[in-house]
Amino acid sequence: MRRYTRAGFVGLVVLAAASSACEKKAVESSSPTVAPPEPAPVASTAAPGRVNPRDVSGNYKILSAANPGGGGGYSGTVAITKQGDHYQLVWTIGDDPPYRGVGLVMGQVFGVGWGLGDAYGVAIYKVSGGSLDGRWATSRSQGRAGTEKLSGPAGLNGTYQITEGKDGDALQPYTGTVTIKPSGKVYQVTWTLPSESYSGVGILDGEIFSVGWGSAGKGAGAVMYEVGETLDGKWAQPDGTALGSEVLGKL
Image (cartoon, rainbow, N blue to C red; front, side, top):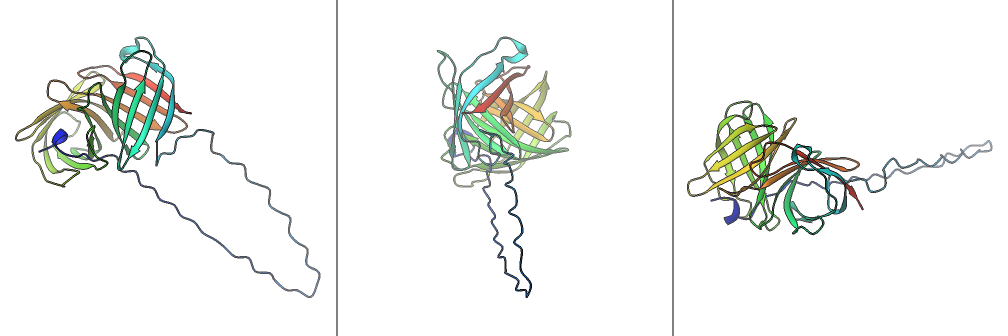
């Protein structure tokens, strides 16, 4: 079993902090001691509103955007909320119904699957030749993530065996195949499991492959943001072949 019938697994967001303290000892001397000058304060290099790659939650403004193929633009806001291992997103764009998504972080990449309903998910993989090592979450996940490893031909083109798949809730294993096909600037992705099937659209950036997916026949859109001063994204519609763009600035 997989996806909507299971609680999902999301982008691992590792919060680590390290602190250190050092003590200064006074040195006695028979001659007068001259105190060293106070060091000049170091200016912070962090820009106001900079996105933390370890926690991308917050409220954002759409600074610029274009629909796939460069057709038109749009404006609005995006709310990103951390929920356990993953993130929930809500886009507010004009009078449109809210768009909702679920996201995972992998390194400096924030991958998102989005839809208009409540049945969609995201999978994000690190690609190494014909091996894909990934994590996934659904819109119905309760803060937990699943894992999935695929093995197949290099080049993201062909049929891949699910060599290891685990549910984020009960960690129940599952098996099946995943078909990946290049389609314009994106990839069409189909999961075939013993009693379920899903379809989605994927975006590749370097060694990171992010897929938005939904139940077969419905699919879901995908967004891949690069985390930096802003969230600099590219996105695809279900069954699309072109990419749009979207840049978010933190409020």
